[in-house]
Length: 240
Image (cartoon, helix red, strand yellow):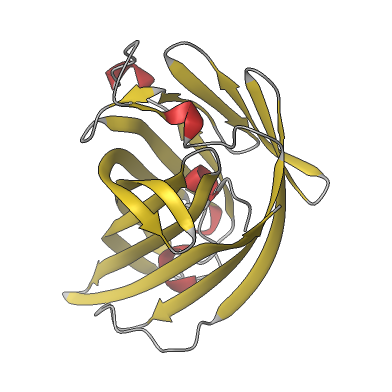
């Protein structure tokens, strides 16, 4: 998984109970609701992205739960490894997966702009503990359901950790993921909700060193409630 999992990992490949529905996705960012202040306890340009050129090797593990009770098997259903390179200049950071440009970060006095194929948004640069650092809505176009599925996401700073694994000076950001969906699939009415959380770990001068995401979908059909959950754990193995 690309290290831009901070945003784009929410494009879930198994939306709506692995139904195999087709469609696309887009995101919008209600950045006007954020506080783009000129100073704060933390300068996120030192945490969100590296401050010098580097390459990260990370491992992603995905777990499924078909009962909606968050009881996952010990063995993940998928394991993948990725290599991400960051090229850093004074105000711009480019992120590559292998040789493909995944995202560009531009640092301004009060904000950090992230631009990728899936998203263009602004994050708060200066923040205090408890501040909201990003808000956006991901819209999935589900062709087989002839509908769209919107997932608002809000992330705030929640903790400062002196050390995590081999990393020091780490910020923890917690994100709330919500959404509702409705439509018809194979002549069956779908009407439900999505609720999830994502925790991001940002090491000073190094950027995103890991994330944990869990999203559960609940569908109400003919007075029957069905739920499924998915958990994704992304961890950096090495940096050079």
